[in-house]
Structures are given as structure tokens and as C-alpha cells.
Image (cartoon, rainbow, N blue to C red):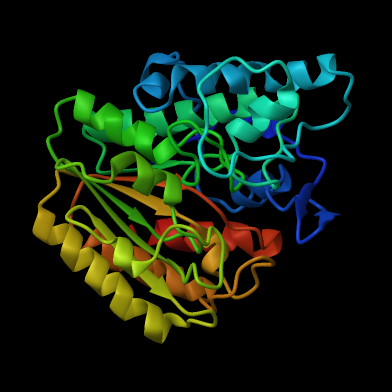
Length: 330
């Protein structure tokens, strides 16, 4: 299994995140990286820089330009530290040039827990390049690859950030595969939280199939996406209750795998989040470390060329073991 990682992904180092009315220590922090790299998962390779073109196949060019300059604009406005939004367009967004970074960052964000710091763009860019390298390896004949993507990506939409995500790595990988000639691609998202950005990007497509097993958005972030009544021809949402253990998770996984198999994709993208673990500080499933190998074995039975991309997972002391266990299942 080829593994990809670029050390510039450490440059995103949020000073904190704002939720529930207060500032908190950022859980999506560089410490996650050391936990994974020190777990004996293999020797990662650096990705080759493929430029902005694959990113712009997914993301709006004005949004990408915003990510590049947001923190500089924040400092130019006389601010310090990370850039945070505080106002959001409730009814609809307007496409225009704003005179204040406050308006711009609110226009391209959907929460207050996804700050933009001096290294955010560089880290997000190389996270996307890591995903591109992972999919390119599989397109070249590797049966399975792992992109250690950080920051994660599945909450980012075509022109918005949120949920610690800035560029949608999975969507970029999908479009890379389709550009290379793959006619049908499936995404299986097994992060604790719904991959709302991926769903938004691909809803209604006939060549991309998105299945997500996640916490019920009636009780958990991102709240406004991921309900079962959003299911359509190419979307399968399987929300589960807080406290879900493997015995209840397994049937949902079976349903998602069967659904993907019926669509006969040529390639599978797995968005793996270890925040389904029982020790995760912001999530509420009860999967154990040993459950991840079985989860992966079940997915591997699809016998599809598979790209695994890292999403969440914030129990740092358990994270390395959880990732290693999942990869061992392939």
C-alpha cells in the first residue's frame, strides 16, 4: 500500500476554535499527525505538485483565491491571530467583491470553528495534493493507497469551508479519476460526521455515488445535512444514534457496501474518520480499535481499486492505533 503525506500539512496550526459560546483548544491540531506517523503505518511518500488545476475542477476560483489571501487580509485590517467569521448570510449569498474581510470570510464559511491562519492555505493545498497522489497511484495500478490528508476535507463545499475543512480532498480525487477515464466512482464516508460538502458537490450526478454512515444530524454536527430523507438516486445517508456500537454499526456498513456494489463503480474513495472511536472527545459512537480492522475487511470485500483518505479522529492517544488497525484490514 502506498502512503502519501507532505510535511507542509503541519502548517495549519489553529490557536483555538469557537463553539458553544466559548473558545476551546483546537482538536484538529498538528499533534494528530505525529500520532499517525508514529504508529508504524509505513513510510509515506511526498506527493508531486500537480498545481491548482485539479483543485479548480471542484472548487470555485473566487473561493480558492479567498483561501489564499484571507489571513493576509485579516492582518491588513488590523487584526491579529487567526481569522474567524462572525457574520453569515442567512438567506442567500451575493457574488461580489467585499470591502471587509469580515464579510468575505462569512460569505465563504458556515461555522466559527474553522479558522484561517498563516499556514492554512499551504496545509490545505498540500492535503489536496496528497489526495491527488493517492488517487494517481491507484489509477496507475496500485490496488489500495492511503492519503494522510490533514486538514480533512469532507465538510468543504464547492465554495465554502467548515468543519475543519477547506478543500474537499475526496471530491478532488473523484474528479481526478473521472478525468482519467473512470466512468463510475463511489465515495464511502465512515467519519462520525456527515460529509455534507461531498454530498453537495455530487448530488444529482449519474457517475458519482456517495454513501455516508454518520451520527444523526438531528443531534450532531453538521445538523443541516445528512438526514435520511435527503437520499436520492446517487446519495445514501445512514444516520445512527449516539452511543452506536459495532453491533449496530455493522448492519449500516453492510447496507452501504451492498448499495455501492450494486452501482458497479470502477474505483472507490473511502473517507476514513477515526472519530467514531469510543474515546473521541467530540463524538459519541462507541467503536473500539479492533472494530476498524473488521470495518476495513468488509470494505475490501468489494474488491475495488481503493483510495483511503484521512478525515477526522481527535482522540490523539488512540489515533495512531486506530489508523493502523484500519489500514491492516486492507
